[in-house]
Length: 473
Image (tube, rainbow, N blue to C red; front, side, top):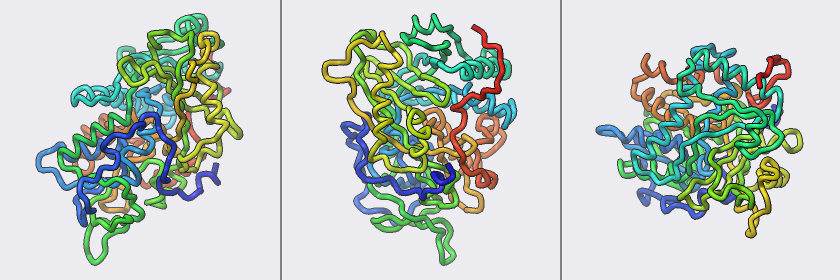
């Protein structure tokens, strides 16, 4: 992993695989608010995914807002957000025991509540603003095939209920045994399952909606304009100079909302934030699957990893389609070579094949025959960002005046980024106070200490074989 983490991070590459969500692209895709790149701005945001878009909206949805410029290397929302699996799902129990051990009970509870509240806030905002993004809220289920994973789930959820309180919305979980799981969720061979609140959304449409609101409020968005270098201003000036192929911009403040690509612009984060290429596929359901569609989203959890899957809700384009991702640990060296790459123009053929086969494999006899037009509708890849401690990096970069970051969302951007944007803007506006501390996890904050922890592997996928718990049926 050390060698993979050391691969120099690049800019987003041209001509990426075409995401299901971006086909066809929105009219905002190649938007440039002004024909020419401005020479100066108050705040410059690099990145137009859910993080950058949410920050822009938060900055501009205020009286007398500053001038805000956004640079996007490719088309609008063409990075991880527009290439994800459509889930708004916390699964906080999977990291909870580790968070208790490393952060303490209070912080572990704060992280779980922050994730849950952010998930709910995303859907509430879409509804409030009338953003048509196929927002759906309901339940998800984790189908568990491994004994150690089952034991860990039992212990983690027991501790969550004890620490958060049994009535806390973030601690609402229901267990099902093997027979109930097979009957209720149409899956075979599992030890059991756990169900809890979640949702799904077209993150691409959601972000396009936020960007549209921000542009109406004064955002200057410049797509196909990569930031290729950032430097401190010279000649006694404050702020930063951001270079692009179309010219340079002087910005009083710069925000890196660049997730897995961040180390390209800020090399001290090489090996601190490491890219991971994820693979996702959209499929037509088999002939024996419920004609009115599935009623819950899924994860399929085994010894060293998992897959995740949503169904497209009624009223959406291709309603009933299954969107499934993950699968990287099922190939050679548990997907080691997906780490460190920023190449979303291609995919590993073995991972692509596993994605193609996985839904039919999990549903077994409940699948039936493939659709006459074929099972697979589309497959694509996207680049996520991971940190050694399993948390995003949020706040002012130490030692750098007016350089801010909100990145490395661990593949969980849809349950972290929207509310993180609000927290970051409060920090930038000198509202970093006790009230913010009550809800924003300390572990997410940028600090000198974050530079000391080099990435060595993804956390929370595997359950320790030393976790000896009497599993309850």
